[in-house]
Length: 351
Image: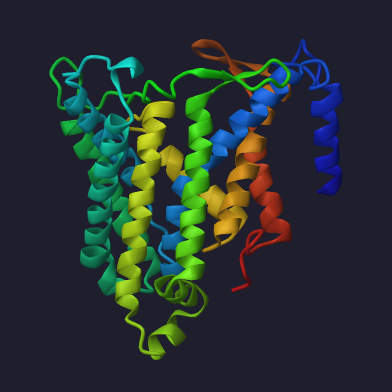
């Protein structure tokens, strides 16, 4: 594993040929290298925001919430709808120049509150009565995910002239939708993406303070380590579960709102981000904030650097030719390596 890491670094820094890759080696194109690194960090911040909610639910309740991606997707659509109402977009494209900070923050808060309530209802109505029945809970959350996705296609967006179930984008505030000169290797970088990194850091600090510096956080961590003993000590574990599920769903909605501005949401976003969350949490370890950070960073670095610094092949299909890359293959190779040497994840504890 160490040899593979060393070889990867040497390839990216010195050997990657410009004719077969997007950029060539870092020593020949330092600005593209730095841009890819920053893109990886900003993607990792988004992955962390989304996966931290999934990790909280998975780590504490041992519930593989298969509806987590749908919570993210619906949160993105709700943020879009609210921003349209606030900016009087009426289904027309809203540009960043028309959006102030509050017209991005308010839709995000509404989406978080809405999905937090939906998460609470999901836990109390559908999951509370079958604790410990992993397969049944997984099937229930899959059913909820399908229902949410179908209702989204049937009812969102609500504006005339836009087909139901269409992909939508929210607009960043105009104050951050610009480039800033970093004065390093001639790189100008998006302030919006840098803001994503800042938001990820704030979420991480908030979660750490909540989990390690408050009484409810102590109870949550005790529930992760030993749910039965925590209940035996007189702690109302049901309240703990309800809080965890509510916060997890709200974080999914926060990620959905950010992703709607970053790349846009569509009816297939749920499956994509559920898979991403699973990979990040398995790599990092259940219920660990630091593990989620490490998993998100590793995922984003492998995904982006393999896309830019490995040769891109041409795949022959019945519809013609298309390009293929190794990002997905290497992401799952990373997952396999971690599971081979650390089955509990990088920061997880043995079960």
